[in-house]
Length: 322
Length: 205
Image 1 (cartoon, each protein chain N blue to C red):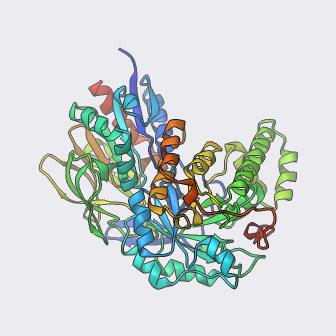
Image 2: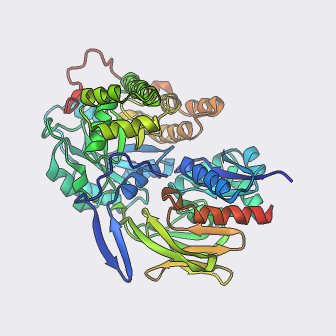
Image 3: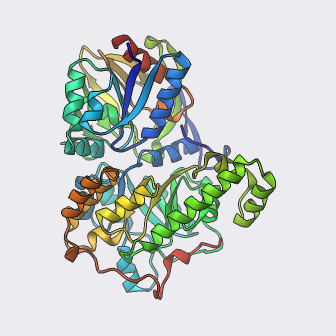
């Protein structure tokens, strides 16, 4: 069953209509969050072309994310990174059977509307693109299409859920090939969840209220999350995942699944690596299977990667205070 | 006799939700039994009934082939084990599948349910919907249907019993001990379909 903490029943994104003699509703929290639940234990791969999308589907990815440039190229190119060409998104939608997601800029309500009109299956309001409004994210309850948002800690995650995000992913540091930041982010979220769960179990409402104030979210959402002891939506890892072992490690840390950005198509063995990362994600509990997956790739073909300490651009900080 | 042992195929998709719904169904019915996530052929060989959950059918199919789980499931179903396929799970149980946009599919299928499935029959995620449906034949007059990028059945053989239709499209079927639904009972609070399946496993046990 889907925990419905932070549900908004009269959201504008909910559409009621009659089909034949049946009354139907679209865009409800159950449908949006339910969609994310179907992705669990899977890998979503960043792609920029139809060919890459087909490689991803054949490798067993649960969905593809369409970008104009892979995050590491965004980092190199500089300038303004915007949503991908609609024509390419549509070509990919016509050529694979798995869900197709696309990214919009943080706060860019109209890029998001254009993606909804394009009929993508999920919109990623993403720090990989140049933010359009860092003080206010998209109010996602107005959309019928579900959203995924990045977060570095519990406060960010809950603020995004309060705005209507149906799924959360860690931010990590995109386009670096370095998993270190994603590891920190998931540990941050887990630690904070453990803390509020124990406060909830102690029945200390005063402390929960002060946490809600610190995190800048409603008390109700904090209380519901604390009672669950986990985020009320599906939570994937993202940012810097490059190898099967990276993916398996993040699954072990309690993530529900994996996003891989530059790690696959910036390597020199994309096909094998795509398959290997899927295998390691599925069978993460079995170190021998992860070893077999790791054996399918060649470390000399991995993307070089960057030290995350001295980056000129820290994408993860975009929109994090709002 | 020991209690029933029901497995939920834990390769990909919404496994935990089905484990929970099945546990609650057992408890409500007062039937003694266990519910476990199953992934390996060894785990599958021990079960009396299997739920194949929602997820991506291409992924669940391909990855269950990798470790030999698919072969074991096939063997068990051929020997009469009750199985409940939900959405992607129903696609996997079928003989034929095509995608609404992409067309004929060459994906691993279990080849039991004598139906042809249309994947994504109602459209993409934005067209996912909730609607009240009915499965009168198995005594469920009202059920909250949650359809997420759902498939439908476009052709069915004479051994296939149609349990439910939504606007003329077939969305739930039964063939012997095999039950399939296009929609997701595990995402609702309604346990009646999980109870129905638990009873099927119990009778067979």
